[in-house]
Image 1 (cartoon, rainbow, N blue to C red):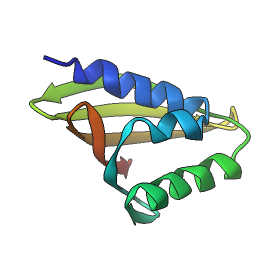
Image 2: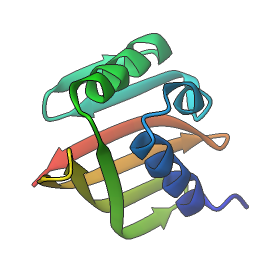
Image 3: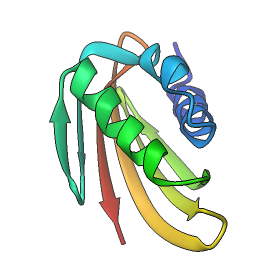
Length: 109
């Protein structure tokens, strides 16, 4: 059985590197993304939404505080440090299909 926690950690590390090409390989062909600013559906739109985030910040560091795994879902409490100064507390709920990310739902607070 695949360790979904490790796949999620890989996603957070890739996101922190702002590596859009590596990020593309982590998603299914038809992923969805929803956060407090909007939503995106389909790989092209999800990657564009991530690239917009990357382009809007100099640095972004995602640190998992706790990770929970059930069947095909990982929930993670995260601390996100933007530009080295702005701290966000976020919960990501990530659904996996065949070891790829099918959806990310991010909740701020």
